[in-house]
Length: 173
Image 1 (cartoon, one colour):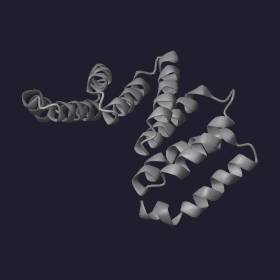
Image 2: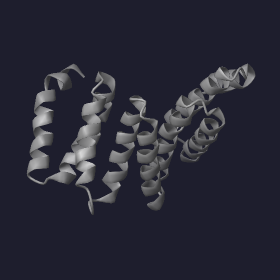
Image 3: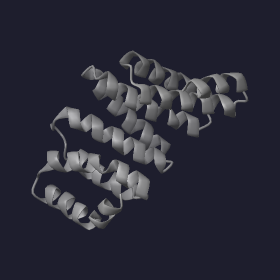
């Protein structure tokens, strides 16, 4: 991440160039790939701005990359506490992943989407979405996704003082 931080001005220049010359697909791909960096380094507004610019120009673009970019933008919006925007972006991403039968994408979005009602203290809705995520990860046989979903469900159970359920999920995950 330190190396990427040092190259951050060059990343901005590359994104700006892609936008100016109409290389929207490349810009969208690059912006989406920078999301973990933006999240970890706190460049949430910047990430949302770049993703938004490229998504706005993505009309008719390759739909596979749009779903990933919407997921990335939704995660950044959620991290900023902008739950209405997060829900809208993640719901749109979920629709696109479902339309192309991309179960891994669906699982990723459901995992992120479960955080929105959780942050709103709507624990029953959060549990419902996170259980859908867990089931999808289990069907895919993805241990990291399964562990993450169980951790989130365990944390949710702990917050609701359901300690036996929390222990079961957290020890098993």
